[in-house]
Length: 290
Image (cartoon, rainbow, N blue to C red; front, side):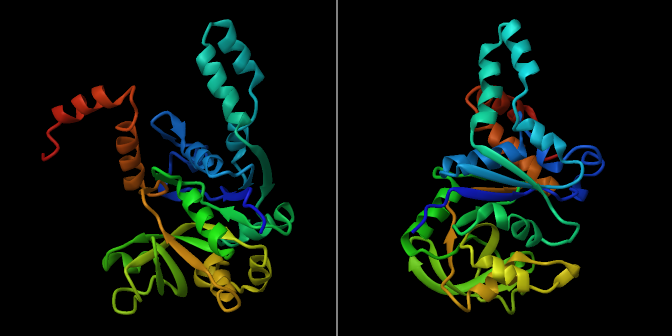
């Protein structure tokens, strides 16, 4: 069984929920504390063993490529002014992995960037994560998915516990509980609502997929909202082979959502040794019940 070494990260979206901030910069480059969102995503992938990072970009996304490239002028300047630690940090960003870029076709839907990466993936398993999802876990979220794949050899999707109200916001998973947070999926229903939900386990972005997903994506018709949905192709794949879900242990921030973005800034700042003490003092001074 081949190891999972490649990951596809779609980053072509407009980020309309953050306008006007995203009018001239990618939403994935918005900072959480002092790093852009997409760097957190890439660092998670590298920590999970990914060696090739495939970023599926679009118009106006050049800043992402520049961020993960070598900026020799900046490195030279930092060396000249004696900021060696910062110079090394900037250099390390480009050295994390092999970065590959491709442009998404002008077709809507989160299945499109995955299909656009087909030739770069070849005949091997691969991961897909979204460019604005941050996870704070003791063991990287993607590593948790990879471990399930390595045990069973079949596709794996990210799952989280949800409330009844959340069943109208997430895809909902039904299946057989195998223990240790692993479910063999037999139902995957997009936003069914509390009355039709098969469980209180939601599906969120993050997948280990096998290359046979591409034939199903190629056959997937335009669905809800006039878009091609990855989950529709996965549902077809489930008819031919097992698909598993892993309930992730850790905190999830959909930073494409303004409230979750604010939470990520506060909560991740509180994990920083250089910020935690003073930031806690500041938060305690605020009358947060006004």
